[in-house]
Amino acid sequence: PQLEAAVNSAAAGTTILVADGTYDLDGVYLRFATPDVTLRSVSGNRESVVLGGNYVTTEIVQVVASDVTVADLTLREAYHHPIHVMSSESDDVTGTLIYNVHIVDPGEQAIKINPYTQEGALYFPDGGTVACSQIELTDAGRPHIRDDCYTGGIDAHQARDWVVRDNLIEGFW
Image (cartoon, rainbow, N blue to C red):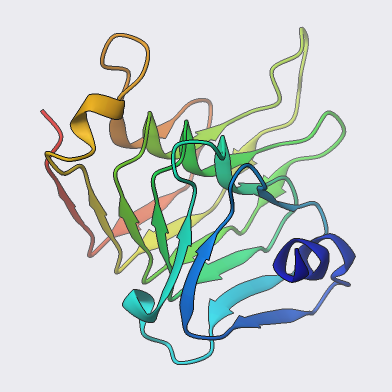
């Protein structure tokens, strides 16, 4: 609850530092609706902070604001997407940085990037970066894949100018 409250009340320019440990979200997701907010581990070691969805949390991190950074964390077992970046109904979302993140066993795409989906939407999720991260689907996670094998590492729709570099994506067929 403290982590959810910190994200929901964060002002622009805030860095939320998460202490080492495993945090079971059990249905709670972290929605970044304020621009220029960072979520990262205190230690900088992505394996030391684990946010677990237990296949109950639909999306562990949802980004709907510009200049959001998610770094130095492990995200496990989201029902759908551990990270979902999308534009809003009234603005583009730009400058997302996903750095040194380990994503394990997503129920669908590990990182989903798409525009607001209402008819006539004119806003897009552009100009982000996914770097120095690891995305994996293990044998233990394979039975949890949803919607007739609708899975993958990074899935971007109507998004431009993204940089995807120095990542390891493994276990997806």
